[in-house]
Length: 97
Image (cartoon, rainbow, N blue to C red):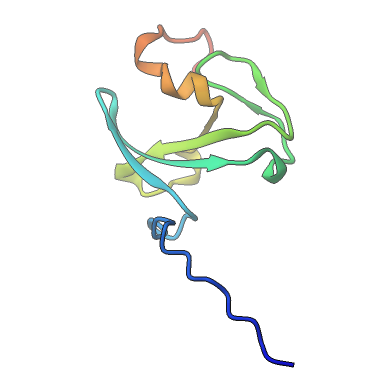
């Protein structure tokens, strides 16, 4: 039986710093590396620093960390997608991370 050729995935960005598929974002609050996380890939509960609510397992969200640290585990934060997008327009939450 002949083997099947797999299509090349040229539309995906290259991995950044060995931290999976991340994209660089520049904003008034600094340079960030951001990775989208699908709902199927989540198994833990996280606390969003934007709204201080839980991100429950199965919820799509983003993981962001300062680009200067190149993915320091201590600096990674899990955000709701809308909270991440609107973070520069909101005030700080009561909880400090």
